Amino acid sequence: MIKERVKQFIRYKQVKKFVEKNERVLLPAMLIVGVAVDFITFRSIQISVAFSILFVYTIVAGATIVFLNLYKEHWSLNPNLITRYYRLVAPLIIQFTFGALLSASLIFYWFSGALSISWPFILIIAILIVSNDVFREHYLKPTVQISVYFFIIFSIISLILPFLLNSISPWIFLISGLVAFGIIYLFVNQLSKRSLLVLEHRSILLKSISIIFILMNGLYFFNVLPPIPLALRDAGVYHSLQRIQGSYYLDTEPESVIEKIVPGQIIHVQGSKSIYVFSSIFAPADLNTTIVHDWEFFDATKREWISKSKPSYKISGGREGGYRGFSSAVIVPGKWRVSVQTLRGQTLGRVKFKAIYAEDVLEYKQIIK
Image 1 (cartoon, rainbow, N blue to C red):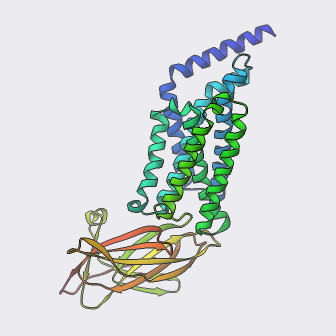
Image 2 (cartoon, rainbow, N blue to C red; image 1 turned 180 degrees about the vertical axis):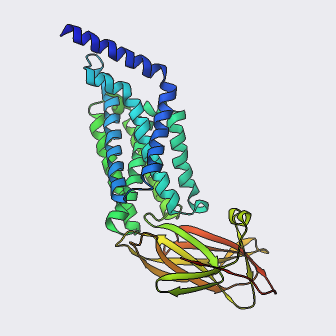
Image 3 (cartoon, rainbow, N blue to C red; image 1 turned 90 degrees about the vertical axis):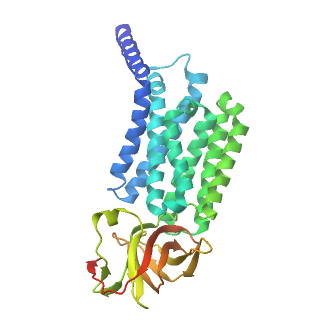
């Protein structure tokens, strides 16, 4: 019995020495693994499975935060083998779960909105992912740790509820925020009863959480946050459009490889011929909503974009390739952009192009979508 305990102690010392020696490599490695797992799995599995994985990550992260904050006060003087090992790997678990949860939010929000609109929120997530490694020592402090955890919970709930309730109503986001705030309040309240360190930082922690709550709502109601769960799968500008037996036949101008890579398409216009913008949008099976195409022309004199028309169409979700729709307009030469938006003005994506008048007969290439 004594001999076995000695072996266990020696083995623990060896593992501890390895972890401490390679900590600067292991911590960022766990972060990278968490991000990589998301990019591999969430692009190829069902959304319900993805949410189940996120739920498990959230529970594991929360349990590890509780353990880290209680270990020193309750178990450090007389730890058993399990608590010793758990304390050893706890920072790695925090790195992995935080990295996975933050990158999941980044993936969902990245593909659901236009970068030109949603970049502030996406930048916040990206900074948190990077700082999770760079400032890893600060992540062991309860104020930072739990504040980031609240941001993660808020982000994940605001992803899941629209899918579950099949709605992008502002009320869904408000409910998401209140649920997240309620969860983290109970979390802090219960943890502060058992940890003097958390109790000392309780007021600062609640202020930090309140600031994050206000910031998230501000980003949402100023239409910076993209309209989860909608996601723009495809969008483009075309010369003609026909729908035949469920397929769209679209005429476009041939482009070189370089022209396809460089943003900003060139469209040649002739007379009063209409130009079409086609878009394909992913939405959950039972979600019904309205999509708006905001046609904007750049006024070179005023140096601003001016909305010329806002045609709309209704969509019903469930189609794997996205729900397809289009709008058309007769345009004049100049810079144009068409924003694909919700009724609230949240932008899913944009089609940018420059219209040039052409006298010659144009050649088109037909594609089917």
